[in-house]
Amino acid sequence: MKRAGAHQGNALRLGKLGVEKKSVTRITRRRPLTEKELRWEITYPQLEKAGSWEKVFGRDGDLFLEVGLGKDTHLIEQARFAPDALFVGLEYSRKKMEKLLFKISASGGQDNLRIVHADAFRTIDPAFPDGSLAGAFILFPDPWPKARHARRRLLQPKFLALLANKLRAGGRLEIRTDDPDYAIEASEALESAGGLRRLTGDLPYFEEPIDSGAHLPTLFEKKFARLGKRIHYFYLEKSVTSDVGSI
Ligand SMILES: C[S@@+](CC[C@H](N)C(=O)[O-])C[C@H]1O[C@@H](n2cnc3c(N)ncnc32)[C@H](O)[C@@H]1O
Image (cartoon, rainbow, N blue to C red):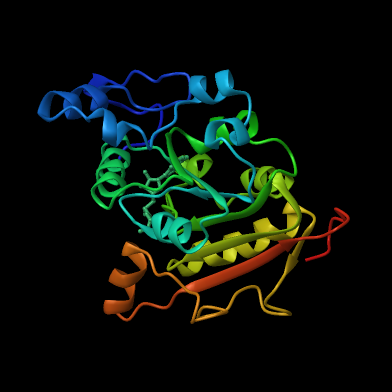
């Protein structure tokens, strides 16, 4: 697995949003994306030019964000189930992101969904105004267990505080992880994130979905379920007043 800024043989060249440029060339040589497939991607400069997500989508709607899509179709399914809402996914790997563009296109497209090839650490703040998100998902983030990779962990106080700030009052944050150590780290990080109320009461997480009827499992989740692994499901809501310690 590569990490941003890593130098493995050929030095990786990082673009404005910290994404790896080398893989773009590799994919493009094999089979360039068609215009039809690229329609579901939005670049940060395109967003800047449009000025807002409403302008990108051509309409208003509750805005949902998923960070770290991989090749999984969770967000495509969410977008299908809620056609009035707007969905944005961030994925750091160009290769995985392009696979998703293929999937979206092959299934007939999804007007209320856009994918951004970007590093969430660098993109969320400029791309999403404070209080703009109706919901956010972080599903099976890479745990980055080595101490020297800790800065890449999504479930760390600084990143979760940033994300909490982007949620509007009543907005929801859903996190899933199979990693027990990462679950403990996430529980602690969420306590310091501020303004988030647990929907799991006194428990930091549930060991099953809060609403199994509405639950959409991801690729990693299905794999972990087959292996009989325990999953940690976190459900949080942004408080009306951002009172730190409400968790
Ligand atoms: C373990 S996979 C999980 C994929 C999917 N959510 C699932 O459950 O099947 C984690 C994904 O997060 C992406 N990722 C990791 N750090 C990221 C970051 N800072 N910004 C955007 N994507 C990131 C990785 O490239 C990878 O595709």
